Image (cartoon, rainbow, N blue to C red; front, top):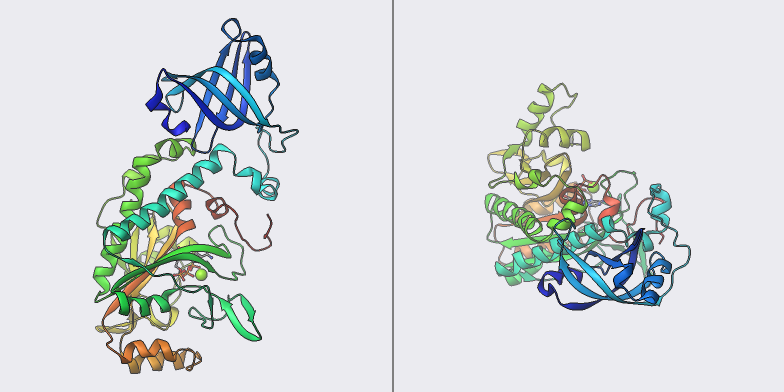
Length: 426
Ligand code: ATP
Ligand code: MG
């Protein structure tokens, strides 16, 4: 693999990959090969290369699949630090008129060809970073003895309200694609203590923004015997750990993306905490027309996060703008013990979480107030009937996190095949 070339300096190796690009300058030919793990330049000097091989290197076309043999050389000027002196080249599958050339294309043109667009170095770097982030998350929870307890994707519950649900026909019964696995994770937390679920969730978002997908991946942790503050601590440690892992293992990818790495290095623990009420004051002081009780939109989130180098927690939101299961703050009942984590550099909310309402009667009351079907929530309220405990959890959106860490303008690049308003293909 190209990623491991450094272990084979001065040895002859074979790479199985695709031709990204080729160049010629007088008596030297260059083939740039990619294999999914990275890119390397192969070099052939006419005088020192078999004529047939030299000829073939001039004919092979963009995105042909190729096997390349060669000696690994250290080359400080190459992005990866290595180069190949080519000794063999074999075309496995040809590629005529590859549609994505190396000039700039419009976003719609590329999005229509997403199945090919992902081959480009920028997209491949993003997807490798996404993979590292997902692995870091799994490692983080594994190291802390969380149990992975996956939640169902088909559900009869509308946990976050009914406005953006995808409805499906479940053999004649109405069902939905899950918007969150949280309620199920509360049940598994009462069985297993500290749990997380990790999977796709679905929201029929009706507005077109750069932060919303209709299908996205969320990791949700739920912890029994965990209060509001302890929950924040897990969240900030998780986000910090993710950043360190990417900084440590994806330097080349971050460079490919021209990411300003100093911004990621500036993130430190603990993350600042700002109450909603304080946040409203900051907004009003900077001239925003914003009243206590309103929910933040993207511009407000950006304005708030601009005050900090690290992500910032905004906590204790008005109960009226948050989900029914949030626990009211005992010292101020109009607000709930919920917090959103706003990423730095204006990337907006990446985590929503909080302490859950753990007493039966107030929870039943909230379900009524929200006009939710009580029978559907009977199993959920059972959790407060049989050994209820203080518990808390949170959900982190993977694509928003990828977009932030990679410095992307739009969330569509953060997932291999984005599902957006008006786009379901490819
Ligand atoms: P927003 O107000 O930005 O729509 P939300 O309050 O609906 O977010 P939550 O329900 O708290 O978000 O979901 C938890 C996390 O899931 C969010 O912090 C975010 O990272 C992510 N998320 C939510 N909706 C989307 C979406 N449509 N596309 C991608 N990620 C999302
Ligand atoms: Mg939303």
